[in-house]
Length: 181
Image 1 (spheres, one colour):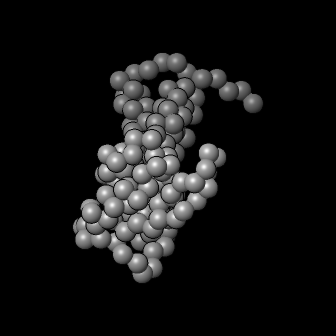
Image 2 (cartoon, helix red, strand yellow):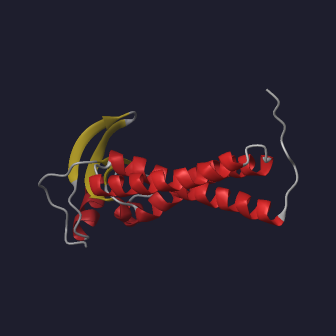
Image 3 (spheres, rainbow, N blue to C red):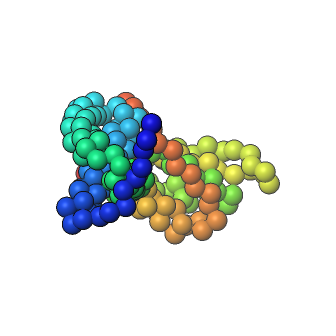
């Protein structure tokens, strides 16, 4: 099998390599979002993204296979793959779709943190707990993902030393979600 790469780049070759890169970024961004929507049970979004992904993939691979010896097409394909993953993650962070369970552990100001959150219409559950250095208050609060920065800010206003974690949650049934839109 005789296989050699070409390193000649014409204007048309450059445009095709850029198109391959762009299409691959679009494809991988859609793939990343689709996977994250699968985890959140968003069936219609998953179907639409999957359909679009398949169409973009076919177009992209057709350009790559049309000239497999052009190293710039292969580099564009690989670069678009890597870039598309990061772009997809960035997009998903900005969309902040779904819900999160926020956990706050406070050594001294747990009740005040709970009151602060309740004053801002967040439902909070306080649980007495024992930590490494003794008794603490653990607070849990189920919120929309886009509200995480606001809730963290409210906690920090009361207890700068509070330990805060978040975890994505999928299904929501019953309970209080406040009056936020």
